[in-house]
Image 1 (spheres, rainbow, N blue to C red):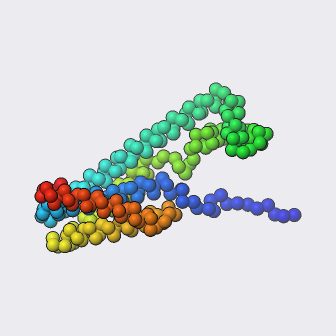
Image 2 (cartoon, rainbow, N blue to C red; image 1 turned 60 degrees about the vertical axis):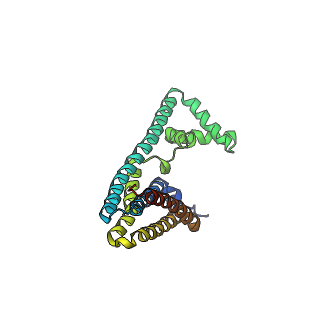
Image 3 (spheres, helix red, strand yellow; image 1 turned 90 degrees about the vertical axis):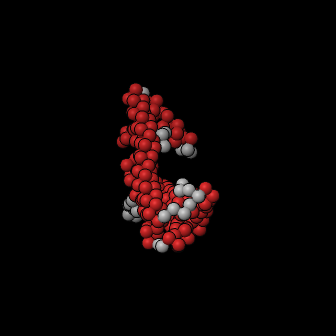
Amino acid sequence: MTAKKTFDLNAEHHRINRNSWLRASVMGANDGIVSVSSLMLGFIASNADNHTIVLAGLAGLVAGAMSMAAGEYVSVQSQKDTEQADLAQEAQELERNYEYELQELAAIYTDRGLSPALADQVAKELMEKDALGAHARDELGLHEISRARPLQAALSSAAAFSIGAGMPLVSALLLPQAWLFGGVIAITLLALVILGSLAAWTGGASIVRGASRVLIWGALAMAATSLIGHFFGISV
C-alpha cells in the first residue's frame, strides 16, 4: 500500500505575500530620495548657504515622513473599511438566505470549470466549514495575504521615506559646499539604482528594468527642480 503524502501548505513562499508592505516601502523610499534631493538641489542651485540647504532637507524629511504615514494610513484604512462593509453585508445575506448563497457559490465554481454536481458538493462542504470565509474568497476576492493593513502600510512608508531622504541629507552634512551639487546628484542616483534593484529583486522582476525606471523618473525630477532654482535664483 502506498503511503499517503502529506503536504506542508507553508512550504512554498510566494512573493505576492510581500505586496502589503513592499508597495508602501518602495513608494516611501523613492519619494524620500527624490523629493528631498530635488528640494536640496533647488536650494543649492539658488546659491543658498549650507545651513539653509541642510535645514530644508531636514524639514523635507520630517514633513514628508509624516505626510506619507498619514496618507498611507487614511488610504489603506478606507480600503479596509470597504472590505469590512462588504463582509458585514455578506454575513447578513448568509443569515437571511443561506440556500441562495449556497447556489451562488456553486455557480461560481461551475463557471470556473467544475461540473454542477461537484460544484454543489464543494460549495456545501466549504460553507459548512466557513461560509463567510468561502464567500469572502470566491465571491468578493478577499484573501488574507492581500487584506488591507493600514498601520503596517503607514509605518513601512514613513520608515522607508526617512531612510531614503536621509541619504541626500547626510551628503549635505559631509560634503563641502563646492562639491555639494554634484555629490547630492551622485548619491541620489546611486540610491535610486539600489532601490530599484532591491525592489525588483524582492518582487521577482527584472533588476535592470526596475533600476532603470526608478533612475529615469528620479533624474527628471531632480533636473526640473534644479532648473527652477537656477533660473529664478531663489530657494524653492
